[in-house]
Amino acid sequence: MSVPRLEHALRLVGLSHHKAPVALRERLAFRAEDMHRALGNLRARGFYEAAILSTCNRVEIVSVAREDNADPLAAMRGFLSEFHSVPENEFAPALYELSGGEAARHMFEVAASLDSQILGETEILSQSKEAYRVAAEIGSCGPVLHKLFERSFFLSKELRCDGGIGRSQASVSSAAVALANKVFEVKGRKVLVVGTGEMATGIVRALKAAGVSEILVASRTESRAQEFAEREGGKACLMQNLVEHLAKVDIVLVSAAAPHYVIEPRHIQAAAAQRRGRSLCLIDISVPRNVDPQVPKVVEDAFLYDIDDLEEVARDGRREREQVAARWRPRLAEEAREVLHALQDSGTRDAAKKLLAHAAAQRRDILAQMNLSGMDAKAVEEIERALERLQGKLLHGPLETLKQAAREGDGADAAAWISRLFRLELDAQQASAKTDAQAEATPTASEQLSARSAKSAPADRAGLPNLPDAARRATS
Image (cartoon, rainbow, N blue to C red; front, side):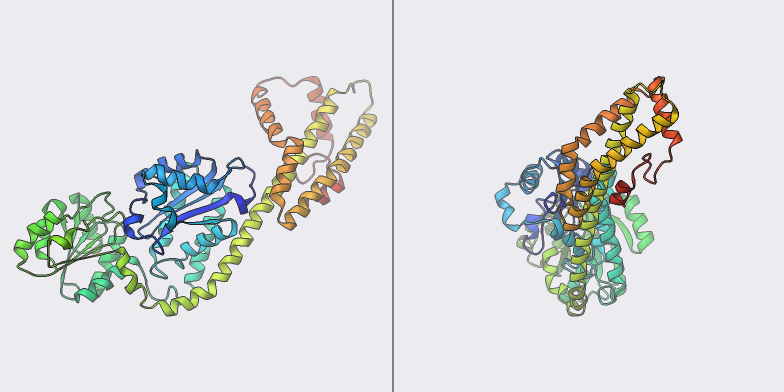
């Protein structure tokens, strides 16, 4: 695939904690098991490449649109609406839509946690890597997204080594524990953690650092809960005994990644009879939410907080990190511009190589069609040299045009026109089909003569025989 004009083709749409409440984000969240189907569906709407990042605080799609995709943003909005059965007018006001350099810059800031609710949080980098891995696995991550993701990971690590952002550990899970500590002093408390994923791991470690007296870890499967408890500490328990656990603990931290509510009003009501008026703090950082929002309405002593309630905690320690972020944002913007320019340059180089290969193939065809059997070797060599000089003179203008367009930022348009004028994509398809058809065929006499002629002439550094000096200089 040639690199399209990225200022138009590279598109990103998303919604995040900045404008979209959790009640909206959870309706558009993607489950891990749905990612392959979602990416296949999205690419079929006119995209070369696509990746989806779905976390507790954001849902984002980044893509590279095909040239015939007249309105990529509309296609992406339509995909979100149809895939999740959510009317577009219900989420469109919260969407941000970016293209070209702004989309690349945003990718870099997200991976570096500069756009996170908890500035400097550590989970987003691994979540971005997972989005990249899934896209690459399904084949929807091509040269553009590959380059952007890889660069974003490198810059994120470099930023964390800069100090300030990574000096003290920040994460959504640690913020959830900090919120619990504001409601109840967690030291000496009994805590139930529902979930055994990455977020739950962070929660348990933060709880242990805060000095809780007992940690129960609940999972739908006994083996998973047991393995987690042995690795991170705590006591494994089963969701089947949820009411019993709720009756004992003071704080419940939930990150279960289930597509439905795992704690409902009926569970809290059943546990309340044994709690004898003791308050219960529940913090649900799952998206979609795993604790029914109706819980506080049916039990007076139950207090429920969700991911959006971490905003107050997020402000703690932000000032120092924001100073580092302010210094890095211009750097990330410049990095985004440089990466896109490099990708566009690769497109013009690709077009130049295809044009040279096209001309060389035409020259060989002409030689193969000529009756050279009665001519001596010196005369044949003179004809070959004349065709080479003609090729160099004809290609000098187009190759220089490609180079100049790349310098001026119009490389993609120039490459597209060169491809159309010389029908390079069609020739490539025909050449591929011809190669397949002739794979087992015996070479003809003219092909043998052409092969002997090519063998007798020195090959140039690009692998094309006898390119004239002017053509070499134009592509160097």
